[in-house]
Length: 178
Image 1 (tube, one colour):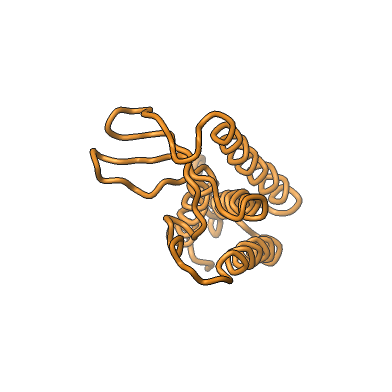
Image 2 (cartoon, rainbow, N blue to C red):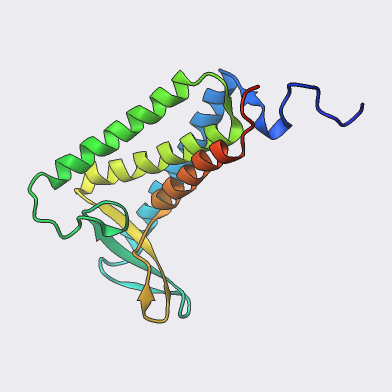
Protein backbone atom coordinates (compact mmCIF):
# COMPACT_ATOMS: atom_id res chain seq x y z
CA UNK A 1 0.00 0.00 0.00
CA UNK A 2 1.44 3.41 -1.01
CA UNK A 3 2.63 5.61 1.84
CA UNK A 4 2.67 2.74 4.35
CA UNK A 5 6.04 1.66 5.70
CA UNK A 6 7.05 -1.89 4.87
CA UNK A 7 6.74 -4.38 7.68
CA UNK A 8 9.83 -4.33 9.88
CA UNK A 9 10.97 -0.92 8.62
CA UNK A 10 10.97 2.19 10.76
CA UNK A 11 9.85 5.67 9.80
CA UNK A 12 12.36 7.64 7.66
CA UNK A 13 13.47 9.85 10.54
CA UNK A 14 14.51 6.73 12.42
CA UNK A 15 16.45 5.19 9.54
CA UNK A 16 20.02 4.33 10.40
CA UNK A 17 22.71 6.33 8.69
CA UNK A 18 25.75 4.27 7.94
CA UNK A 19 29.41 5.20 7.49
CA UNK A 20 30.81 7.15 5.70
CA UNK A 21 27.74 9.42 5.64
CA UNK A 22 27.44 9.51 9.41
CA UNK A 23 31.07 10.60 9.75
CA UNK A 24 30.58 13.37 7.18
CA UNK A 25 27.44 14.63 8.94
CA UNK A 26 29.11 14.37 12.34
CA UNK A 27 32.26 16.15 11.17
CA UNK A 28 30.45 18.97 9.40
CA UNK A 29 28.07 19.71 12.26
CA UNK A 30 30.77 19.41 14.95
CA UNK A 31 33.04 21.76 12.97
CA UNK A 32 30.21 24.27 12.44
CA UNK A 33 29.39 24.29 16.15
CA UNK A 34 33.07 24.65 17.07
CA UNK A 35 33.58 27.47 14.54
CA UNK A 36 30.44 29.34 15.65
CA UNK A 37 31.54 29.04 19.28
CA UNK A 38 35.06 30.27 18.66
CA UNK A 39 33.93 33.09 16.35
CA UNK A 40 31.40 34.43 18.86
CA UNK A 41 33.98 34.23 21.64
CA UNK A 42 36.48 36.08 19.44
CA UNK A 43 33.92 38.85 18.91
CA UNK A 44 33.31 39.12 22.66
CA UNK A 45 37.03 39.11 23.45
CA UNK A 46 37.73 41.88 20.95
CA UNK A 47 34.66 44.08 21.52
CA UNK A 48 33.42 43.65 25.11
CA UNK A 49 35.67 44.50 28.07
CA UNK A 50 36.01 41.82 30.76
CA UNK A 51 33.18 41.92 33.32
CA UNK A 52 31.27 44.45 31.22
CA UNK A 53 28.35 44.14 28.87
CA UNK A 54 25.30 45.73 27.34
CA UNK A 55 21.62 45.00 26.88
CA UNK A 56 20.41 43.14 23.84
CA UNK A 57 16.78 42.69 24.93
CA UNK A 58 15.92 45.06 27.79
CA UNK A 59 15.15 43.13 30.96
CA UNK A 60 15.88 39.70 29.42
CA UNK A 61 19.19 39.29 27.55
CA UNK A 62 22.57 40.97 27.96
CA UNK A 63 25.80 40.43 26.06
CA UNK A 64 28.58 40.24 28.65
CA UNK A 65 32.20 39.21 28.86
CA UNK A 66 32.47 36.73 31.71
CA UNK A 67 35.02 34.07 32.59
CA UNK A 68 34.10 30.70 34.09
CA UNK A 69 36.90 28.64 35.65
CA UNK A 70 34.35 25.98 36.70
CA UNK A 71 32.06 23.58 34.89
CA UNK A 72 28.69 24.23 33.31
CA UNK A 73 26.69 26.97 35.03
CA UNK A 74 29.68 27.87 37.22
CA UNK A 75 29.78 24.58 39.13
CA UNK A 76 33.03 24.52 41.15
CA UNK A 77 33.98 27.99 39.84
CA UNK A 78 34.75 29.19 43.37
CA UNK A 79 36.59 26.04 44.38
CA UNK A 80 40.11 26.53 45.69
CA UNK A 81 41.07 22.99 44.71
CA UNK A 82 44.43 23.32 42.97
CA UNK A 83 43.80 20.49 40.52
CA UNK A 84 40.53 21.98 39.23
CA UNK A 85 41.98 23.14 35.87
CA UNK A 86 43.64 19.77 35.23
CA UNK A 87 40.49 17.94 36.30
CA UNK A 88 38.34 19.90 33.82
CA UNK A 89 40.88 19.39 31.02
CA UNK A 90 40.89 15.63 31.62
CA UNK A 91 37.09 15.46 31.86
CA UNK A 92 36.77 17.36 28.57
CA UNK A 93 39.27 15.12 26.80
CA UNK A 94 37.53 12.02 28.18
CA UNK A 95 34.13 13.31 26.98
CA UNK A 96 35.51 13.86 23.47
CA UNK A 97 36.99 10.36 23.47
CA UNK A 98 33.74 8.78 24.65
CA UNK A 99 31.73 10.57 21.96
CA UNK A 100 34.13 9.37 19.24
CA UNK A 101 34.07 5.85 20.66
CA UNK A 102 30.26 5.82 20.65
CA UNK A 103 30.12 7.20 17.11
CA UNK A 104 32.45 4.46 15.87
CA UNK A 105 31.13 1.64 18.08
CA UNK A 106 27.44 1.97 17.28
CA UNK A 107 27.30 1.27 13.55
CA UNK A 108 23.64 1.99 12.81
CA UNK A 109 23.05 5.45 14.21
CA UNK A 110 20.01 7.56 13.35
CA UNK A 111 20.30 11.20 12.32
CA UNK A 112 19.13 12.47 15.70
CA UNK A 113 21.84 10.50 17.51
CA UNK A 114 24.58 11.58 15.09
CA UNK A 115 23.50 15.21 15.46
CA UNK A 116 23.48 14.79 19.24
CA UNK A 117 27.03 13.45 19.16
CA UNK A 118 28.13 16.27 16.84
CA UNK A 119 26.60 19.09 18.90
CA UNK A 120 28.08 17.65 22.07
CA UNK A 121 31.51 17.13 20.49
CA UNK A 122 31.64 20.62 18.95
CA UNK A 123 30.59 22.24 22.22
CA UNK A 124 33.00 20.23 24.34
CA UNK A 125 35.85 20.97 21.91
CA UNK A 126 35.07 24.71 22.01
CA UNK A 127 35.15 24.88 25.78
CA UNK A 128 38.24 22.65 25.91
CA UNK A 129 40.12 25.05 23.64
CA UNK A 130 39.18 27.91 25.99
CA UNK A 131 40.51 25.97 28.96
CA UNK A 132 43.78 25.29 27.15
CA UNK A 133 44.19 28.89 25.93
CA UNK A 134 42.85 30.88 28.89
CA UNK A 135 42.56 28.44 31.79
CA UNK A 136 38.82 29.13 31.88
CA UNK A 137 35.80 29.36 29.57
CA UNK A 138 34.58 32.57 27.93
CA UNK A 139 30.85 33.10 28.56
CA UNK A 140 28.82 35.93 27.08
CA UNK A 141 25.06 35.38 27.12
CA UNK A 142 23.30 36.56 30.26
CA UNK A 143 19.62 35.60 30.21
CA UNK A 144 17.48 36.98 33.01
CA UNK A 145 14.08 38.20 34.07
CA UNK A 146 14.57 41.47 35.90
CA UNK A 147 17.21 40.67 38.55
CA UNK A 148 16.89 36.86 38.40
CA UNK A 149 19.80 35.65 36.23
CA UNK A 150 20.54 32.32 34.62
CA UNK A 151 24.32 31.70 34.75
CA UNK A 152 26.11 33.23 31.76
CA UNK A 153 26.77 30.78 28.93
CA UNK A 154 28.08 30.55 25.37
CA UNK A 155 27.46 28.77 22.06
CA UNK A 156 29.40 25.69 23.24
CA UNK A 157 27.26 25.39 26.37
CA UNK A 158 24.11 25.66 24.25
CA UNK A 159 25.43 22.98 21.89
CA UNK A 160 26.19 20.69 24.84
CA UNK A 161 22.60 21.06 26.03
CA UNK A 162 21.18 20.49 22.53
CA UNK A 163 23.44 17.47 21.99
CA UNK A 164 22.42 15.93 25.30
CA UNK A 165 18.73 16.54 24.55
CA UNK A 166 19.04 14.95 21.09
CA UNK A 167 20.87 11.96 22.59
CA UNK A 168 18.09 11.31 25.09
CA UNK A 169 15.32 12.06 22.58
CA UNK A 170 16.79 9.45 20.26
CA UNK A 171 16.35 6.77 22.92
CA UNK A 172 12.88 7.93 23.94
CA UNK A 173 11.37 7.99 20.44
CA UNK A 174 13.15 5.18 18.64
CA UNK A 175 11.32 1.95 17.95
CA UNK A 176 12.66 -1.10 19.75
CA UNK A 177 14.22 -3.72 17.49
CA UNK A 178 11.76 -6.47 16.67
